Amino acid sequence: MTMPLTLETPFTRHAGINYPIICGPMYPCSNPELVAAVSAAGGIGIVQPVSLTYVFGYEFRAGLRYIKSLTDKPIGMNALIEQSSRRYRVRMEQWIDIALEEGVRFFITSLGKPDWVVRKVHALGGMVYHDCTEQKWAKKGIDSGVDGLIAVNNRAGGHAGAKDQVSLYQELAGFNIPVVCAGGIATAADLVQTLNQGYAGVQMGTRFIASRECRVSDAYKQAIVDAREADIVMSERLTGVPVAVIRTSYIQRLGIHAGPLARLLLRNPRTKHWMRLLYTLRSLYQLKNASQNLSGSQEYWQAGKSVAAITRVESVAAIIYSMVTQTKSALEN
Image 1 (cartoon, rainbow, N blue to C red):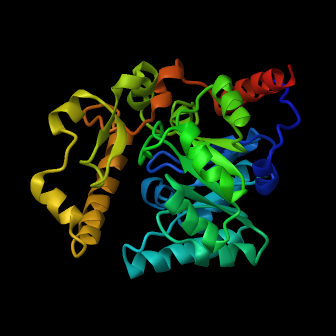
Image 2 (image 1 turned 30 degrees about the horizontal axis):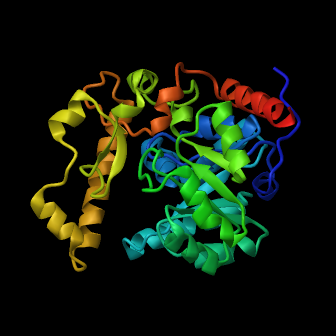
């Protein structure tokens, strides 16, 4: 297949890529081969450090070098910067330093104030985009000097936002930096609509889970293909805050709401951080096992509402080729 030369936006210029498509960082689904395949096809794959090291077993630097052996195109890294513990902060700083040493120049920050990440990355000529679900979180990134925003809407998988794609863009457009749409994107029509709304690109997760390169179980991929939009529910049982997952018999047995005591502790300023840490540690184990579980007996599968448009498992190259060729044709007509 012959790909179009480029589909340029302010975001593609920042990231040094051909097409305005990000493979979003996903725990536990961001395996090295998936990250590399998206970058090789002209988008940009984002390394999720805990997936790389804990799920897929790579020493961090060795994992980055393995990805770079699969493609010479730019890759990015996700920096989760929530102040959950001093030990985690030190580890994240080390990962960022290693990524910069290995030539990574595009970073997505999440869950905190990214000022210290921006200083490190800008010193070496890199770019930082910041995850946000509403204006007040975007402001933390803007005040820290980020170069762009990832606008997570209410159709996203994982930790989805509360606002729809249109209203969230209207809320963030006034900052006058590139905004990337995250949530509900699976087809060329979605990409065309998003670019016409003013977004500088899209971030996709669910669509790339249902790809040949993603190393999750076939049961997980088939669940995405089979699911309808109404099958996506928000569960509090995973991390203590709502997470978009596919409604399965396992989810129905488990329930989607945290218990009364857990809710109380999650709302208390003195205990909420410890409860979030406890939930996070438990979810790391649960999600890792569920994503790799070939029997499908533990069906704890994150996905967004874009499942409605996903009808088959394809290669990453085929997914991106279809999206960009149809998008260029639509925008030129």
